[in-house]
Image (cartoon, rainbow, N blue to C red):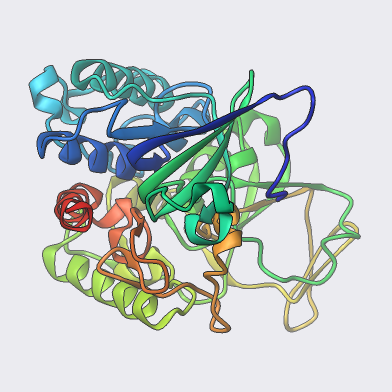
Length: 384
């Protein structure tokens, strides 16, 4: 991603100063913004939230049309949402989840006056110490955040940056031979739109998380012949439909250990297991919850298994999880040789003042709201 994309068609605005720039208005970003404003910072003045999406709802605004609230992913209420008279526990189940979340997040932003700047793309975050010229020697230490809007390029100096950009645009695709020769359709989770697009086709679903199970459910219901592939045997748990306290703590611990060591983050599903909920039981009863070991390679008309068998396919749905979207942080050289970045208690070890909401143990699926509160307190200490 270019770090200096200004052009004559996009005029550049000189730097403005703020205390905190939050990148992303999904659950992690809004949670952090809410807690910072509860601690006295003014939205739009001390706290600037920048979001690339055309509308509210974070990644939910992009999810496929058939997904409903409560289908596979539990949607947690944002902190203080009850003050706006909203809760996902009582949200409509007969409307697309993307519309419900978009509406609820919009009401939340209005209620708390969070003044999100959108659509706006953060192009680069640079250390102010290296980005400033000699004329800027009196400027505060921190970061220079370059933001592209539809009208102009803006730059903000900020003492603190909170990255909450999420993972939606960085789907993982396993390194499988033959992807370039397979003649059928290939889509990732963000590209999946409607199960009816695959009606009557032979479809491989690759992945061991809740999205993969949701695709199994939808595709098999419209007459697609499904084949489910995973690298490891999925671990189902009978503890209940929601994440238990013990499993949640174990998942947080694994994520935290990886983040502190700068390793690539483990998958959430691999850490927590898959709850044997109503959908899983339904899949089992219909005889489609049949897992195959990951195939060895793709060929033009299908997949070849590790024992050499040929499985004919018309399409492959890659639902193998996501990586954090951090390209705009490249100028800070955060990546380690171990495949991750070093983060301790939500803050970069190499760049104090850079916080990563929704990363590692802060991941939204295992407690972004609690992490937002703790992060906000840490940020206030950093500002003072």
